[in-house]
Structures are given as C-alpha cells and as structure tokens.
Length: 112
Image 1: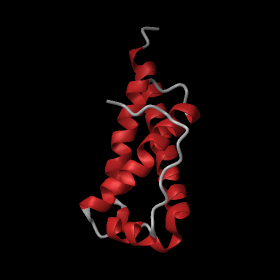
Image 2 (image 1 turned 90 degrees about the horizontal axis):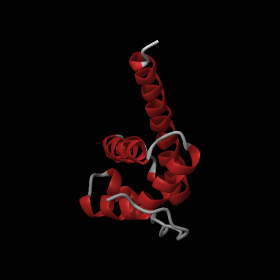
Image 3 (image 1 turned 135 degrees about the vertical axis):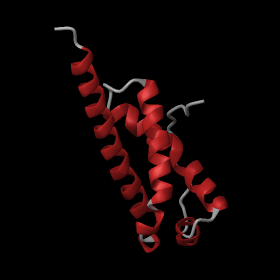
C-alpha cells in the first residue's frame, strides 16, 4: 500500500540513530523509513507529475534499496538535515532515471 502524502513533519532523527542506520541496524532503518517514507512519496509525486502512481511506488522501492545499500557513504554527523538532503538527492536522480526509461519505452513502442 502506498503512503498518502501528509502534512505531518517527520520525526527528527538523532545522530545516534543515523550512526546505527549507517552501521546496518534494522531498528534504526525502520525509524529512518518511518521518518521519511511519506515525505519522499509526496516529494516524488509533486516534483515528477509525469510519473504515474505505480512509477512513483517503483521509484520509492528502488530508492529505499539504494539508500540502504549506500548507507555507509552517508556521514551521520551531518544529522537529520544532512540526511534529508542526501535522500532527496537520491530520490531526484532515481525519478529522472525512471522518466528517461519511460520516455525510451514510449519511443520504442510508438508505431510510427
């Protein structure tokens, strides 16, 4: 089930939580996911209106996988604000990639 965009602000993540997340702690990942999932969904829907809801959900799933896989590249000392910027940058890049893929598929399937 996809998250619904809400106006609620995510809980601020402590440096300790971010350090645990970077170390691979599952409970810390759950806290990070809870803090950012709805916000990222809303960001993707608003910034990339050409993407369908299914595309946004696909991007979001790929995004969380990439965030987890690249977690050791994030510097937890930058805190919540640094993490927010980091994940939004990844989200933007994944959305651009998805838009490009959809454009190429449309060209390939165009019967002209």
